[in-house]
Image 1: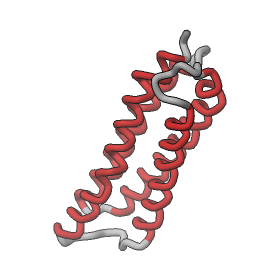
Image 2: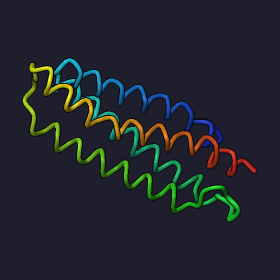
Image 3: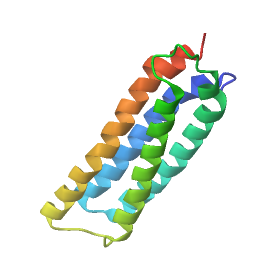
Length: 134
């Protein structure tokens, strides 16, 4: 861990996006064992990420911040809920899915998770990380 917790955040973002991509690639090829494993890794990365932000950064967010603490906290909660939903979705699937239509349906359904992660990380990098450095 870096001496300044905010220094760890961009690397965590890269790691989490690579992991969601790994999950989606598992869905693309119909390998649900791989998709589940990536989802589980993503859950652990997300939990560590929000713990760091919610203890070391968000409490330091100034009242004049571009986005209030409640925005970041709400997005953290939404991402946690989405990861829980994906645990359930993947648990209901067989280990291997061959029909391309079924794989595409799951892949399409995973896009909102990736998009929310990307949007949230952009918000943190343009807001939280800058505003807590002051």
